[in-house]
Image (cartoon, rainbow, N blue to C red; front, top):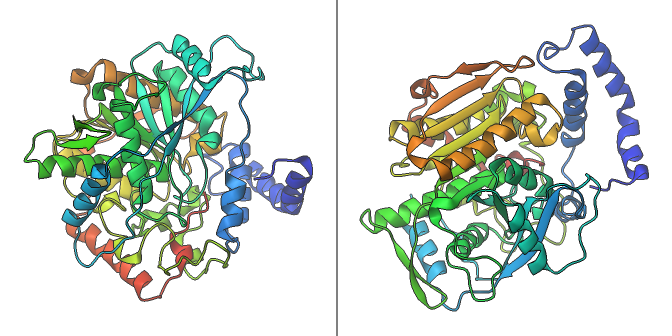
Length: 481
């Protein structure tokens, strides 16, 4: 988004009457959220709702605006790197094999090619002012300097959010460096391929390559091999989707290997594919079909338009959409909407998973996260659940400065540290954090979700079939952030 004064004025001036009305209603306790939000939150979310509830813009325009590089300054290290294409096709082929094994019906996709995978090493830069310029040194020197500020073994493999078609590692540097500071570690933030130009499973293939790159760095890499027990997957929204999809891929490879550690040929060597220390999601988007009831029932606390408001919004045509050949969804073929590696909500087997972290608001995606967390707990997985009352999607990123956001990031970063440093002490626990007072109330994780697997599957398939029949346009599954 253009952050120039003129652009901001053009954006906000039409909102002035709405802002005054919102402030008045909040001050008089006439707003339904007055008791739960402060004035800044009320105004911010209402402005976002207005901006996001209009007709969709062309995808290329939104994509380009969302990827503008803000530069590097202040207490962060950023070292850019790129992984060469593997010398063989094995990684690609075992992904395709897993997709086939996990299919439920005639699901189709376009097989992506292997490409170099870019990423940014992000870390906390200690003892500098918030506006300190980035040092004019090489990427290797930046990486070496970052490592001097690293205090723990934690390496977070991070996937940014953006509904699979927006954003970039450059837009998430502040958040990744914050996670690095709190965890004491470093973050490997992946520039995975975006839809619609690169549909499923291109981003998942890039994520898989990135994980193998951490474990087995190609010649010339900045980093030394990272132990799997030191790696935590992390991501927000669509990045959370990739984190959990990558985990499901690893679990499927393990199932196919009869429960033993699978192997693959990677850059000329036969290597193991172990599980990471943990997987974490900030409001992970686990249901691409957008089928669960909280998309409607929790809309009062969120800024994203619920499906009923966007179901008939067709995306304006431009050079990247409609796709060629045409498909029903920006991220994947319509037939793939319910595949477990596209929508992890449809994955029913999480047994053998490393510990999981779910952090979210009382938001539209709550139901799908509850279902997956509940399934994992019932299958013996250690799950940390942390939900914040009346908070919107990715609130800690969208509403910076809130005490709840600071609490969330602290909890997330500390959990990553504990997953690496004290894996045997990880336990299942759930918390509901109250609005304003931020009291932590325990949650019964066994009763987190009452939806059966059959009920969830039926809802997802019904939503998918409506898309396939053309009853709902692409806008239904097009979160704008």
